[in-house]
Length: 211
Length: 211
Image (cartoon, rainbow over all chains, first blue to last red; front, side):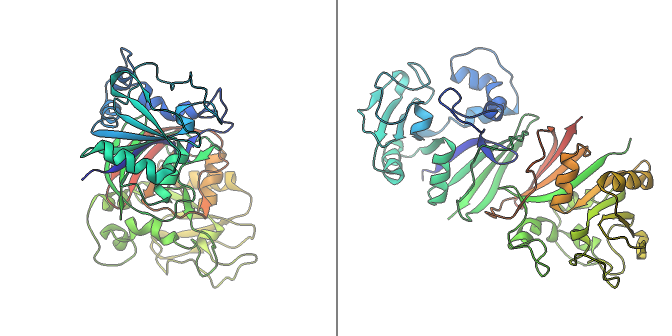
């Protein structure tokens, strides 16, 4: 049975993005510090067409995070810096060959034709809500998992709606002090830590959401 | 060289106590859920004169948390449910033989004579601030560590003042949604995870504070 999973980096004080998010700085001030554990790895670099990087416990985590996923769901703000009506010349942050290699369902209030990229990634734009996006992603994923790719508010919405089966947190040893909290307003889901991997750069905890 | 350490249980959303703290419910609604990992262990029960309990990874953590400590510092609210002038009949929550077996410096605005208990625990009441309490605890501890025992606001103050060398967090797989946050307003200390122990009941992360 296919799972709905999400993996996301947070600060030790619970922020998935820093304060003062802007079009120039979409994950807020200090937000990049949450992702250093991944950016430094050889596997993340290879996923993004780059050479080099460190090989360690974080490499395996970065690799797993993209494996076994048949479809992705993401928020509009993760796909695009723009708001409102589409600038159709915008095709995502990731160049011609995005690292997803699978259908990606983008939540938006503005309809747009599907956008087929290289390497098997196609962006579909879903205007009728998170349940519809998940249903379409499940159908596309078949036996494979669906990943709620982000950002914070999208993961928050799926967790609050009881639609996540697994939440994989990468806890960076960083205090941001303010910004966008991941786990606010999601009620009291029953969480079970099922796997923990530790490195000097982050503590990776995989939680099962018990339904 | 002696370290200043603190170990404290928090929810995954960052609360060290639940909402609506009261004299009857000093760690707030749901606050006891943060401590279940410890209360279930054989070592915590033995420390409190009780038999039974589970033996597992959490046992060793509960045991370590009381080892190598030469003196403790705690906030008034951890020692007593009362506020204001002392009710001198109150000698702590822990009976005649508290589990500290060392000097304990209690932060308070109200002077009181030292209180000698059984088993080596003596409570000293410190009215001139957190630095003074730490200085006295360091002198008493000698080569051993000083533990900032809690509660949340006391640990928060020592961390904010740059006086902690190690912070050992027990992250319970629980979302409280509201309450008292441990890590708010402490600035941006440099933290290094140096040891992680995982169990189904909690993820224990020991952070070194880099000075």
